[in-house]
Image (tube, rainbow over all chains, first blue to last red; front, side, top):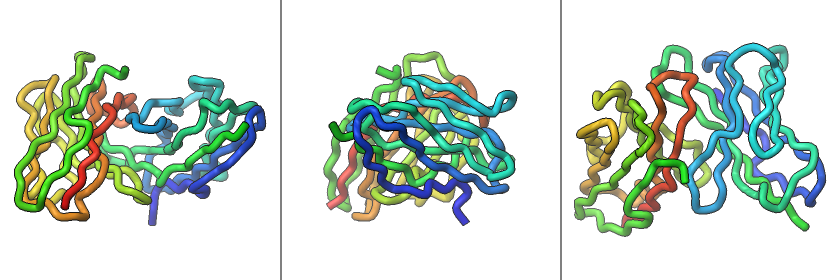
Length: 114
Length: 114
């Protein structure tokens, strides 16, 4: 079974609307959780990460995510998106006992329309 | 610019060719990685190097051969590839090969195997 699940492959939204990109994780991964973003024709960049402490994590570009242990989720949110947020977003977590590995979700393509 | 440079950006090769992908990082990191990004599949970790030693190899076919001559350079040597090996190959680096380390990605090499 996939250890990191992104339920939506594509999310279209209008500019200035709020957005939530969903991510669920399984017990086969650690509770270190990451969101990466990939803009067209570029590599991935880290948006934010949860390692411990406060369950609400703020990242770059106005994004935030909330770690919810009871729902095994780490959804990414932004209250008002811009055209420039159009990209693919990946949730990731390392498997337990791994050194340097990350299990990535399949990605969610966010399309922001004017 | 993430500080991780990959060349070439695009590569087309036949099944009998031998080619190499190059990655260079200017961040002073100790760990480097090769990931494969195929359409409609999650990113797959191929190899992890820590201080020039391979620490993880995720059951990658022998037609892919990594080389890490020093902590700043990483190569992926390719020979007798198959069409299903066509993908975006991403190099990444991090300070150390730990599970909570931020990864810095290059822009990737788009490989097409004919």
